[in-house]
Image 1 (tube, rainbow, N blue to C red):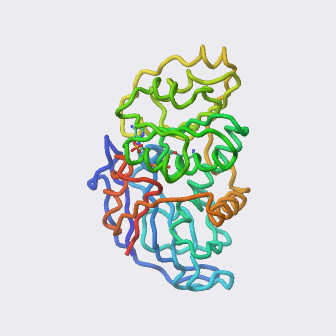
Image 2: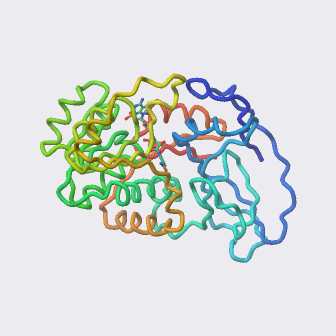
Length: 332
Ligand code: NDP
């Protein structure tokens, strides 16, 4: 068994030399415990943002889909899959009945996904899927006919938010980092408009894409683009702050624009959230997304990296925008 231990705080992009891969001896299973083998590991932007909160050295955090390969718990048979925040490790021993449910991905036996791949438990049928579902519905509270703008729109969360927005009868406009991603959002996912934030003028794009201005802003990136969008909102608009990936690799934060005049004059509501706020409603999100997927109303893409040795490059690739949809690592 192997695991990644973070030994240095990230400076700029994560580097292989920030980690050590450690061999582990696995102890005998105790009553109630299972041994799992990782099949897919998740790479997510929060891994870049939050490691600063840990004392080093520390085991690297992260979600995974793992197969039960030995069991001393009758509720968890060999061959079934578990998902959970087990970290960057090949093997995990835990008692699923009493395991600490902390982390963004609660420990759960994989529900029946039908013919869908188990890797979706890290994406559209897992933590990012629930972030899109609860973040949009509970924080942005869109009404039919309203305009939703999404940044990071071609990623795991953003591409899903836009599709739920369409299901709910809204106008959906996204910003993403390449023309190919924008084309995918418009042609395949049904976004009304998508704009390349790297090459276009944001204010002009908003004018063109949002003739009724913006009622809901689902913010995945923060920074200047977010200020421009927020200043273009309608009265009583709602802003869900999901993340701020534009700053995750930066050691110095850019000077913030002043948002208060728009916030006051338009009586906007801005709320940050973390998806584990809805851990007790977790299955509601999974089931809704599974149903929409079955009805063909939700589509997904995965960027699959290969190999446990490739975790760091995969995380860097994600932060550089190599992915459309969810980035995952197939362990073997
Ligand atoms: P994505 O799949 O969206 O991958 C990250 C994407 O971010 C890249 O593909 C890239 O796309 C974009 N990006 C990278 N650098 C920048 C930049 N400087 N400015 C703008 N975009 C950039 O990741 P997720 O869907 O998993 O996460 C999206 C956001 O949601 C993140 O901020 C993440 O932290 C947050 N999140 C929050 C959760 C919560 O509970 N609050 C839970 C899960 C995620 P591009 O080519 O378009 O630049």
